[in-house]
Image (cartoon, rainbow, N blue to C red; front, top):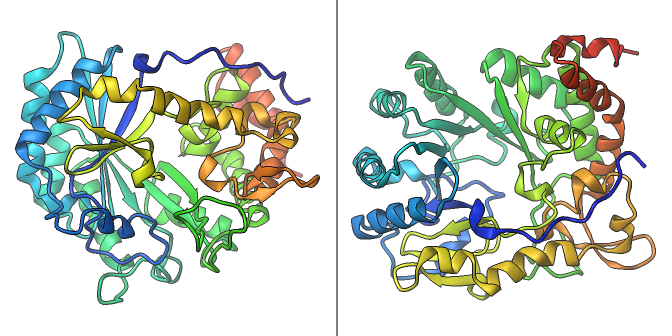
Length: 404
């Protein structure tokens, strides 16, 4: 066994939870071919897809009030959140200051496709210390394969120009890179492009698993040709890791590597897909509807509208707790007995659409890749854990993991 297994304590839901704020719902100025959220507009056929000031203020008040820790993060997503305009977020910051508790730190994270960013946006982000995530799938051919505008035109060149504006104004940014058919075969080149050409120090690699029967989450699935296979994704991560560990430890931060190190050090992974239970990462639609998760924005996963019921009560409701515990309870034996379960935990339930070798349902579509990747990094992660315990420099990891 790579790491001993322990069962999680019963969660104290209100100690910490996170909400993705969909202030403009699924409204977007792009038509990304693999986007799972564009179709959510069908849930609100007569909507203008714009959060009102009343909802914004009341949510800010209740969200801050419900948080028990010293730090609160407002996560703005979409759709495309820049469509709401800077004035919306200026009011959001004003409300945050109005309801901020003494000694509390408030942060803002903003995920965007980048197309509408300009110097006014950059100045606002810099002034208010927003962390900005920009979606970029690599060089032109890789990015433009699927990330196109409503007219089908490419967008990569514009996104890169906008990133340069953020850098000019000193805005903290990271890159969210989706891994799919168009870029999965070029892991090292893609990583070097983001590191060297874009200058990204913080990178997320998100696997695209696009189900043709995406609303059902049932077996008998078919995934699109755009999707990355488990084996391909695992190989992608392994090759990026091998490149990263030679020179970039402590310089470039790849989310899944940081998450893995936390798990090897005995801490919670800190990323919802790898936690033992779900339920603390919810989604708020523009009209105040609160859903169990942004990957489950469907009628049967609607908890209610916080304008009619207290936000904390919805987060702590039996329905949400059951949703979260279902991740742990739904693990097949193949996963329970797996030596990398301590970090993987069956990943996100939305991807549990395969059967185990013995025919049991609930196996994650990406299982083969995760198992290969987490097994591959076991030795260097143990070495890094030891260095951390000794309070030594990250670069010394090379003693533990010499190139072959």
